[in-house]
Image (cartoon, rainbow, N blue to C red):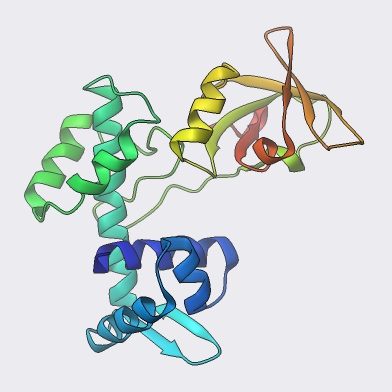
Length: 219
């Protein structure tokens, strides 16, 4: 597991929980041992990329956040390139982008960004940082939080794993799909949504991993 993987994971977890990240939570996220996390955190702290306080957790420093955003920018640009230019499916690109993001060439990334026309979002709906590390604001929320019978547009996924993206494809759902929540089952909290006049049943787990926007807030 590389330093870049740790910086990305800390950045992502902080954005989700808005607090310092415990070593156990970081270990779970990266599927690694707590001892390995402790060792890497010390290395990152020595480079002034993170701060760590026992019992409170890990924070990125300003330098660490800058590095994390740089890595995320590369990863998401490569994902966009693979889908838009090489016709990969959105469930195929994460692992390839994981390899490509470690190419250390700012000039290559800048030219890739220019070639792609400075995209704002990757194929999974996540914002792509610009060269300065700025992220496009998103007024989005999870489908599980949506009001009934309102027009919504799918703009992203919280879970970008291959299994979930394949589930989305089986349900014929993708970014830009317009849906309405018609019913929530009392027994299992599954959602019945309408897409192009057709009713589709989504599990509670799916509803917790699909980001939507209302019609008035579509980017």
